[in-house]
Image (cartoon, rainbow, N blue to C red; front, side, top):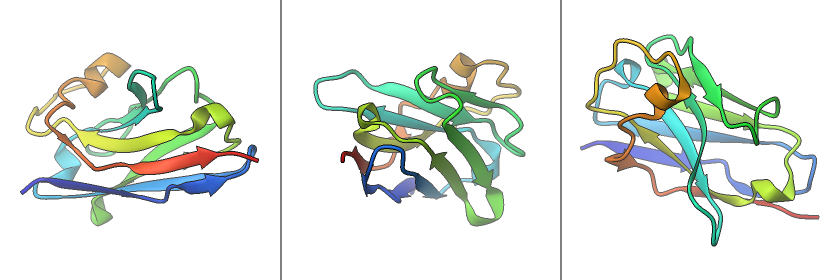
Length: 132
């Protein structure tokens, strides 16, 4: 069955870095886009970053993380990474990844199209806490 497992969360000081990993199984990983989402207590879910299928040539970031976070994928390892630098207290949240499987998209020209369809399969999440 389809599974996505996140890892890499933890407690970090402001200005620090973390790298989250999302390892997938149960589907042909390279064919599908992967997105990272986060949700803090009392706040709405936010689409943080998304990477397109195959070579991941299209990447998208929310304005709140642009310039600080970098998404990448390693299809040989069925894994997507989210490198988070210069972390801020407002980055504190549960982070989870999701896939648009089984929606096969020809192209993802914008963030909306990249995130589209990521409602059925997601991981359990990993907690990131940014605090002095």
